Length: 599
Ligand code: BES
Ligand code: ZN
Image (cartoon, rainbow, N blue to C red; front, top):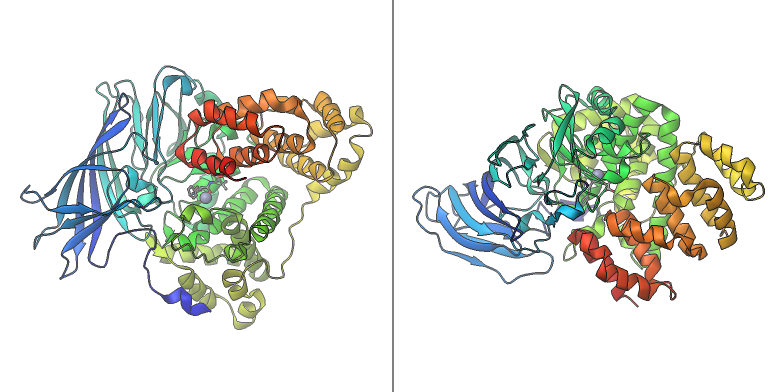
């Protein structure tokens, strides 16, 4: 069984042949054209070659290649593009002449490049300037930069970006804090990073300080709220450094994205991209910041070698995230996150089982010939977490912290495989401990080995209330009001399991004003429960939500639910095509399309 782990580092999601020629540095020169919605680019790539390298092979997707020249003598180099694959794009093969170590590629992106979202001014908070952002993970970077788009290949980069005057441009690198009147910005990233961490955003943005090396970028309309919700970020950074070693990336800033951003967060080095749907006014959803910050170690320092090892990025990061939150807010906070995550995991496993995808419940994935996106579910996140948690239970929290710190120290700026983690763990544990944790079972086999199910004291009273709330709704309101958001989320989930009637939900809504909630997580559970119960009064609010928020974690389950309701399917499809979709990033729009195409 274990033998499949040792087949070497071939990345099934990249055309690159790093054993022949491997990129080590990228210099980018970009001009952002908001009218045409394209980037005109020049990528200068430095690379190392093995003695018999005839070609440099790169990944591209929908790129228009104007020219390829040698960086040494500026003479053209012959190149060819392979026929396009829906998922992988096209290989760009550049014929090398002996001694060449630098190529210069002039290119242009497609207006519908999957990594890019060009937003009109009306789609931003201020409504005055358009906005552009990139989302490169997992394999979309190749649609805005021709390079070796594999997490196992790292390079340093420098960039010069010409954007609209009045815009601030930002990258996953050392960033400006002030506007430049000519709209031309320069960037450098001196640590080697993989392509999926390449990121760029441009818009009408302000900067606010949280600490000497921590800050927030956002549209001016949003910035004050964001600074408030994110005010504990410097403490998170200090806690993470205490647990896992010095933060090596210099600054840690957060960019608050427009609501269409398809993810909760993206750990772009130096500059986390974060959805505005975590701004609640009470910091209740900031574990997401701890998560993206934690990727500074798990992911950005020690990086999954291929997307089959995705759990090494995400499972570890969920673990770090919860340890950081525990340091700041105590173990009961962590317990609540853990229980909510565990419930998600159980649901995910059930769903994968129903779809006949048992094999995808293994931590180590087999995504060859598939879109790596298919591995992006709670198995990597929550089964990964639960495995690490079970190691922690056995060896103790402090020993676990130390062990992980050592893991990151040894693998800083390197790629890691599931096999290398298993080897490391074996070295760190005694034989009895190894046998007790059963790492092979966790990692290589489907479903869950025997484990301790997470529990939260703070949720006990919530579970009791579920059965009483509807009897005396007036008495319940003060109870609800003193709960924190995690308790409320848990309550709504548990209530949903009780299959409430539309009448129940109308009473609840009247008392708690759930439809007006400004907490996106609570609102989402409320919408799902209401749809399942057939409580249609939510539709106007749901329509407004789906018209602005593009976060796939919310949008996709809601759209799927609507698509399987005979009474709402046609309405939802029409609204999706005419309105909702216009605001979504490719990632969310394409996932939803498949919900409607299924019968
Ligand atoms: N790196 C991920 C986002 C991602 C994964 C993008 C795979 C594309 C492909 C990010 O760190 C993440 O996990 N975001 C989560 C939030 C988190 C708190 C679980 C999300 O976006 O929901
Ligand atoms: Zn993550």
